[in-house]
Length: 344
Ligand code: KG4
Ligand code: ZN
Image (cartoon, rainbow, N blue to C red):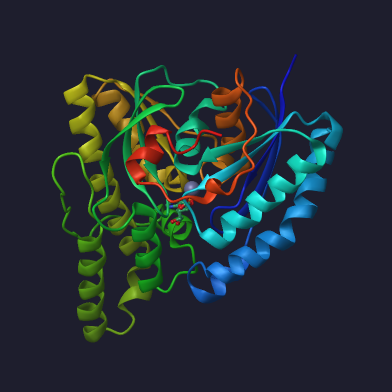
């Protein structure tokens, strides 16, 4: 018998719902909260209010698109964390209400584990064990994935996340929020002619705050000489910053892959949509003899399909209901990545 799961993601500023039949995504809808553009960053209060407004219409629409009625749902999967508390509460509250109303179990999913599991949605899929570089607005992590629910954090950022670096540099360049996709688009028309230092944080970790500072001082100096410097050099500035971020992301990955003799490499999270990173990984797949896997673009940034696929693989044999408040307990990042914080 197949398992039909409604998945809900509301950890930050994307309200998303998906319906899966086993590991097949029947529908995945994401409402991107544009309101944050006005403020140049995510405003938590707005995020939770917008999630609240989006839940019911998203639920109706995703059921309609999937051709599934409420009575056919077997379980509800929801993001447990990490994320913004006020945003998580909205998704969790909606999920729990539905579970109680329909008498079906709640499956709590760790958001970071789900980004890794986004690589399991479509074929071709990586073979275990593989290394996953998870790069989002909040996290930059190197994870060894031994199997479903068996993940180990091997490297992380010691300061900012890579997506955060993209977004902050985007802001310095006067680009709309989030800066990542804008820098990606403009970098494609520029050359990496400006050299920024490639900072290191040991061989397995990452550090992006130095880049942010050097771009800031570089721009201050150059705009003092020529107020139009940014406008005249926007594409090259984007290409240069992006090149540096990609170098900083791929170096620890190369060290770890060699040390562990692993050639199956996955890239996940919002920044995995970046074309420069995808091109660089294609080069590395040739020179390092890697097999590289990316999620489809709609599964790179936050989405509910990745929550659903994680729930399906982790809970298919053991559906458990867990409507308790411990769902919002804080847990250390390492535990979260190992998956121990996400069991229902
Ligand atoms: O995974 P995600 O949707 O949310 C978090 O869990 O943080 O990632 C959002 C991040 C943002 O920082 C955004 O700028 C970045 O992913 N991002 C990109 C691209 N698309 C999204 N960064 C670079 N290039 C892109 N194409
Ligand atoms: Zn995310």
